[in-house]
Length: 259
View 1: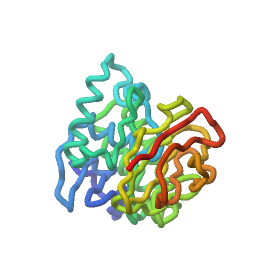
View 2: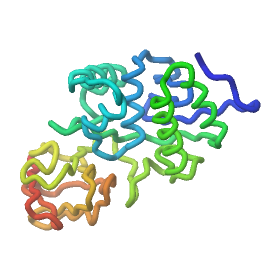
View 3: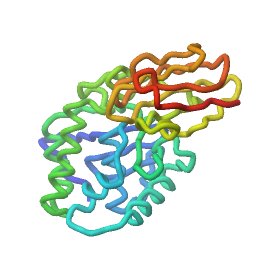
View 4: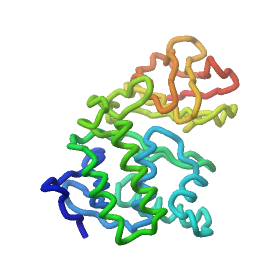
């Protein structure tokens, strides 16, 4: 049931990405205005990923946040992800990237203008009060307050209106850009996918989902991303050549680009 407006207001804290809108106040996902069905746990998993947009969220962290008082296996989380991907039509992982054996990273979310104030937080609380425990309510409130205070994807709420927030700036990505995740300092497993196939004419973007700064450089020095803070995207880059690349800050991190 939708919550009643607070003090005559009808506020809707939202994230928009492509033709989808995630409405946190009403706890619904819409596609072109049409409401999609998500089980409560699947919705909460999606909300957690959106709240930490641009970061790697481990499976353990998601399970702890969504099932804090229940012993569940990775299979429960996997079932939620299947439902989320089906709803988002995201089998190609353009919105939510799977990082093998570690977790997930939400990306390519765009801001949607909103009118946010404390009334929205109150309304969000009332929308969950009748359906969740105290722990669920507090987790939900932390998501709402975190988005409001940090401007994670909400224009008019303190964030930059030009794209998803990232510490060093996040570009509007070309629709056909090849996005390579900078995962962690782990040799040939440091980047995903690796190797990456980049057809002629396609641009490449590196997305740092690690918790430390990295700097991607092609071995022939034809491309240098500059320092990428945690959560940041590089500028879209057009390759003149392919081959090996590495992190100049952590040289053991290596990857390969192919045609």
